[in-house]
Image (cartoon, rainbow, N blue to C red; front, side, top):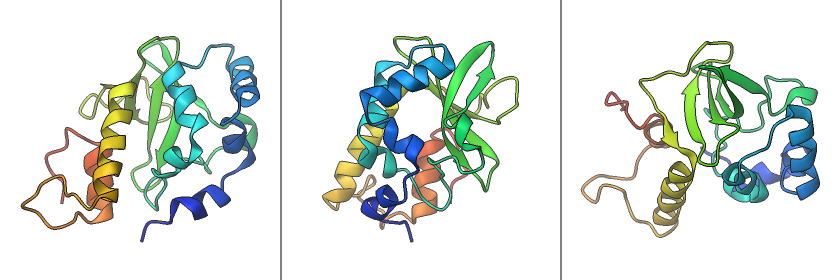
Amino acid sequence: MQPSIASTLAEAPDWFTRLSEHAGIVELEARLNASVPLELQLFYRFPAFACSLHSRQTDIFLNEYSDGTRPPVVRWCGIDHLIIAEFPDASCVQAVALGSDNPRVEWGYDGGAQPNMNIGPICFADWIIKLANIKLDEMNGISRNPESKPTEPRTFWRSFFFPNDNNLG
């Protein structure tokens, strides 16, 4: 069962909570020596929305990393990406490109030279809009496929985070 957003917010670590404030973003930019794209700032400014991603399969608090490095950066294809989630079951991370006015969100492995090209990329703003629409539909009891029963949470999140994977189920 997926934890409630309220209980997830209550468990949020200090670094995550600080990113909901301007000072936390400034602190992160100083540590990274890079600007954080506006879309990514907005993602962290609304922690309840970001917490809606948290589940047993998705760790937005990045617990595998030390406090001083959260959120960490991975370098794929010569571009720094800020890791926003990890998938412990798959040893995979989700990261957003830095240094862009229209950043991409990509999935891959921390320490890898490039993201997994079978999964993405997708524009981060488009991904956020897609997530918001799914959440609104979910809140209103609307299934994404009207002929299907409600999606099991693991399949739902896999289909969302891995949009090009046709082997879901």
